[in-house]
Figure 1 (cartoon, rainbow, N blue to C red):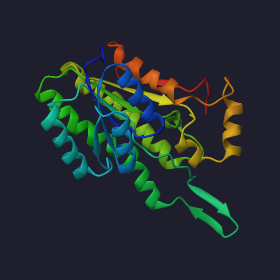
Figure 2: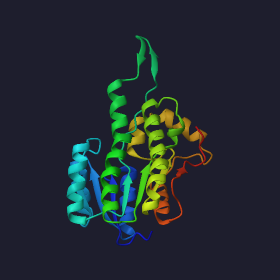
Figure 3: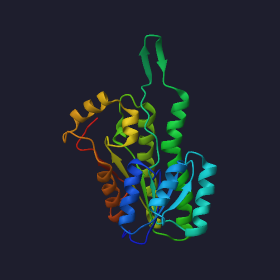
Figure 4: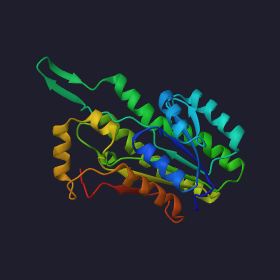
Length: 249
């Protein structure tokens, strides 16, 4: 797919990896819309890129997704590309042994992590694909996964959510390809983003770096380039593109 002039939605595009994707898309001449819960971030993005459509939305809330996508479709008819990038990075094992005893994984954070990282992908894709099909748009769905989908110790909820994202990618590719809609995923390794630094201590990050053959974290721009590549390559479908510097967890 040639991105110039194509209509692209990016969820969670205000900061981190999402912002790198947005900037790269704009440089490619795409017509970009950002769905994000961060109101201040959306205002700042609009100031820097006045042509970017900014829609405040909690993508973990189906009613908000329905309202936001309805608003988008009223103006743009149908998106050509949806990039399901929004999510939260949360680390916690199933149980933790502390001085006060054995602590179970927090149930509220389990639900929030799955809602933000997995249910949101289902909500957004269902609403966008419905319009793609009704307008006969040959589009692309890009799901941002993670290498943690293979099971990363200390990330019960996050790993489960990303494994679900991978399963949806394969399932939807089989369902939608005959209608001209490709579904793909990009799975970054540990990347230099604010969310990574907020979720993991410096000591943990240093241990991770030691395990990466390239001996460094990924750069957001490198992951963004991977996202662009899977959109532009019309034969890439139903697969997960891992960008992890060779890390095996």
